Length: 156
View 1 (cartoon, rainbow, N blue to C red):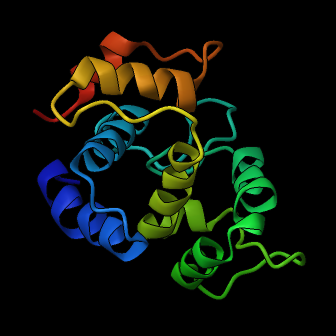
View 2 (cartoon, rainbow, N blue to C red; view 1 turned 30 degrees about the vertical axis):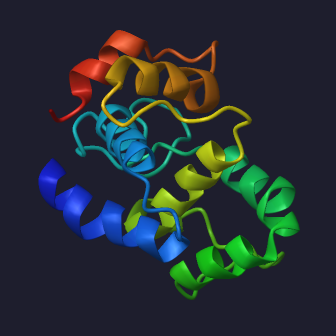
């Protein structure tokens, strides 16, 4: 997928829908997807890993967003629920398959992960700052990804 079209036709409209059209959030999500999916290429983690979609969200992380974040934020819960299709788990949470085939939905779950982080997102043009934010709040210290890799995958 072309990164410019991804930004224009998926990221920007979804962030507007969520009420969060900040450029720094846009750049953070574009960079995250480009890094996690090797240039918007993979929708399932290579090897035996469980991560799904362009944002490589693990099912446990998906469930955590619903159980520990969206369950306490009815406005966002309803907005994101409306982005999902008709496949639901018994507990009312959208099925993990949404992370693969429904890019705006997957983006909204990645947005939740960042939105609940306690610190402010760096400036939009501070790519190393955004990469460090990704590392702390998305990939985590134990994750295999590096800040330099994130920056190198960002579509400048």
